[in-house]
Length: 511
Image: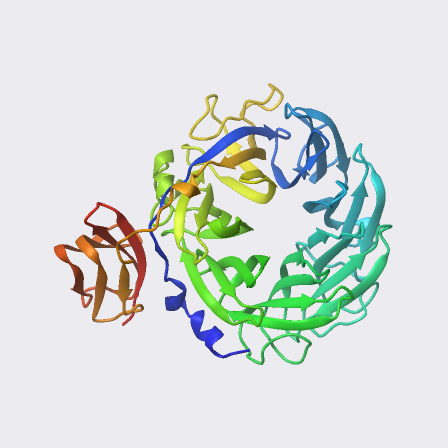
């Protein structure tokens, strides 16, 4: 591992967003809320038959839920009119996701309590939602309250990752603390192989995806303490991307200090890691040897967290996240009219192949209530299925939210929220700019910074509270701005060119 990777993940160098962007043209095709009269949360959604299959939790046997449990797993199937046609319940189970393989078979994954011992739970489901088989895996003692991550395999089974703290039961190796345990199940739910990824510290799985060659990519966080089978020789908190072959053998691991990974894409020329650092969404592009090619940070003065990222061919990448910001890159949140720290919205943004922000769009209500996305599935080109939860009390719709479900759950606080959206942005209309790209150097900066472009007319600097801290009207290709009066932190530089286009850059100001 090259030592340059560590330097790229210092707080200042993460904040190097460079973009000209617009509000996203996202069309909400349909949306609906489901659940009980108590607290309900969605965890997974998949196309199923002519409709959709949804997995979540329900806390009460009321409303649309008729299960006799308290806070158990609730799965329901929707027809093409997004009406519930059947539902199933599972006591003493907490789902984490719903999987679908290339044959259209679905699997529920989570944690469950068989014999009152917490286990990794995987179930293959039939057309009516009943179990074809269920596997409960892990150690002899309870796993602890952890979130498993999983993917369906091409062979009809499932590969999953979860934290374990001992080598008992199905777990054969333990390096200390909590390890990331990876297990592959065959088409009948039997263990095909298992392995532990760890050090003497506490490892936590964050994502897991299949590779094109049949291998697996596992993203985890680790303090890299003591002896183990992963890490880069640095005793520091880091995200580690581990490549396993189809038999579960470690091929290599890459370390990214100061960054928490949440999703990863295998690309034709490397990998794209999506996660968060210092409260903002972060994208990291690296080659197949783990060398960072670029890193970008996105967000405002609140906090952002990535849920999923998707590759859109040469057009770049679409990111789904949760945000509490109303400013900075999350400018579209202002359209919802939410005030102050009451925000809590779904945030969708698109970046080009170099990570520059192209468009962004917040989805939510204007009542200051919280909307969150938990999982996203790409249904077709530009079409996405989202599931999460939202809170609604108002009789009338507000903002983007239209919970027009039956009278069984009127204004019933937090429910499972399901929606389908389409990206309508016209990427073919994007033309190459004749003007030179705006740059700010140095970055990070202290003392002064030089902004360079083509026939600039105005340069403004705002802090993350949206307050204007510097402004200059010019008619030239560059200007040097004095930063001596600014405190250490991240600022937004906006340069307006002769055609009225605004180019936004993040600037890190040091001491």
